[in-house]
Image (cartoon, rainbow, N blue to C red; front, side, top):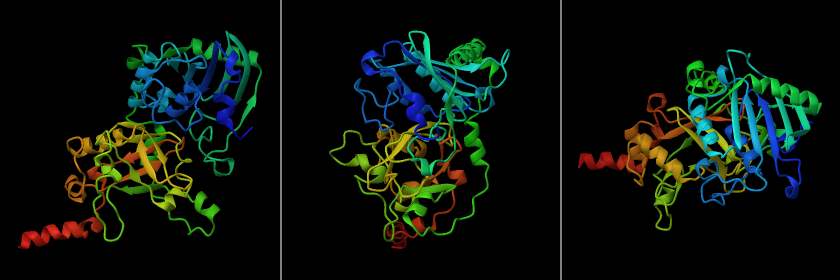
Length: 385
């Protein structure tokens, strides 16, 4: 069973009118946080801007279970071997505490348990296990092929039915030798890295040689990129700062409620490629300063979309302006970007379908195009006067 793995294991097998007491038990080596939320919300992986409770997707402080919300018991087997960063650990602790008992996230206890690389998913109702699958698929975006059709998968994985008796006994053994992520002893037993192992590995990889130019639409979609640059100003024509209502300055229109609403423009060749999953699929983006953002690409006719932003999109503008040392709602132009020392973000994809964003001035390459834009050249002409 290599297709529709997310639907197979994350969607409750019980009818909506008879699913009281249903629980998902999952053992995985690595995770994407968005897959946990998809199972908890029983979502179709394309969340709206706002939940019924008034918070945005992933804002667990406003989580309210419904009649169809399952309890989720999750063991992250490689937690102490780089699967969980310090930021992710703190976020998971917050989720568990805010979940009203619906999230139970655990790590193998290093005093009594080895690392666990098993991938096992089982559904139970009122304490009775009814269905179980095991195989190679991690609880991650790429592990379960979320947001991509089978021909575009980044990983080839399989999950097959296994004995529910075996699954229950195995789960009992592993969970009995584990610690809740909220247990205070975890912080003394574990040393969490600044970013997950797949992100750190990606940061150290050498650039991939460019691929031949694609000849067909399918080849264009399958074309892969080691990383991409998304500029925070317009490259159209001779280049210019984004006006109010576009790009990083999207929220500065009079009709926008939040002045920090923003997006990154995604070039068409990237939107047609396989770099991102299909539009509106939530992804976790780890940033060079240790922050984590939940983002998605939306809008437009290309498969991945043309605008990349956070959920909600005001978080992106707030984050970028904070990095640049600017007040909230400040217009960001080429001059501000040059003064900061970087005019673009670099985004890399990791092995589990997570992403890494670099906006550090120290790692930036000179942007000669920005220096030659009319508005910057005009500054120098005024100085001569």
